[in-house]
Amino acid sequence: MRIGLVGTESDHAGDFLRMLNATGRRSPGDRITAVWGEDVAHTREMLTPYGDIPVAKNSGDFVGEVDAAVIVVRDGNRHLPLAQPFIDRGLPVFIDKPLACSVSDATAILETAKRSGSRVLSASALRWQPDTEAVERKVASLGGLISVTATGTFYPDSPYGGSFFYGIHAAELAVQLAGGAVEDIVVDRASLDGVVVRCRAGQTQVTMRLVPPATPDDVTFHIEVVCKGGVVESLIGLGDDYMVPVIDRFLTMAHKSWLPLSEAEQLAPIMLLEAGEAALKASR
Image (cartoon, rainbow, N blue to C red; front, side):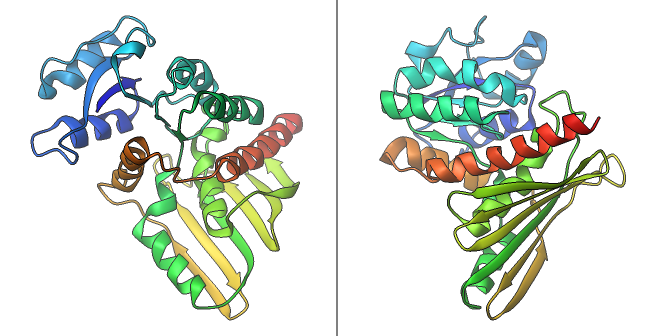
């Protein structure tokens, strides 16, 4: 499968290249065959270890020359226009988290995909880390969910969509444990010192807490789940190859017409973050 890579500023661009194009690559039949990046010099340097991969002048130049696309531009406000040409052609598309920085853009992406037959995946790697899976196993042994609280670092002044840029991790972690669509969204707190958003997923109370880092490099994620049979809590860590489960799910989706996440599961975290971001802006 020929895959087009859109964006080279994120470390995730390097993850895809390393896992798909390096010697002994993870999926021998799949390769990045075309790339676009805004910084041409950086892009060419990044591609040096992987042979002669064409670098496009514009992000849509290779739409007709690939079988799938990976969008790893950091700013979620740009994801809709960058992904649209590939979705319109019905290609499977991975969009790095967040799916978008508004519910309207996220809905447009998913609705266009349904019309064209494209399959779209956007996901934080925290959904499928060993620590997350260990919590899910413990929760399954303790009976029904009562509440889920996910806490994560955020950078409200990030140029890549404000609190969406890192807040998406806590939002997706909360939804992964609670599952499904969310409703009754309420913002309890919104300031530079932290954002707290509550909602309901079925009968489960869900809370997303975003906190500033204690130091610039202090990135932390934590989950607490209250069940009928007890409480489970854990830090959620990221290993060296934390993108592997995400990339594997994208490749399976592309080859087998399988959707790793439902539309509701992909929209829910955007809904939580949009509510929090709106309240945060109003508070300034």
